[in-house]
Image (tube, rainbow, N blue to C red; front, side, top):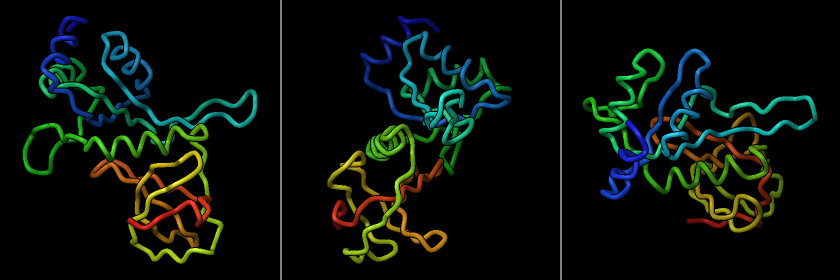
Length: 178
């Protein structure tokens, strides 16, 4: 697998987002290996609040790759004891992540350095389970579902079958019903 393989895959435009679980704390090495051969990767990180603190993963051991399924499967074979590829419920094919879900996930987890926000404005009465879109602020464009968690309303952004991110502190006037 080299740069030429990656370029050929891009030309055929068979690239999709996939999720992989990396075992034994090898995630940064695996990410670097993929980055070095030109594979687009995404890892949700939470930036350190104070000097001396380290950046931490929001979803430990979870790495997203934008690649074609054939090359991902070959990479999995090469690293069979280090990674697990999320699969479709029915079969052995890698589960393709919806482009819009991935876009929303990246938007929310990268805004404000991965810091949470909390719904504080009670002016709008959004009901639990209602689909909403954020219209202003660092999460502008994010779409999700309103859910009450521990007596607080949160905006849930889901990557189906992989991960759910709960975002809080979004003023009600920044939300619109979908």
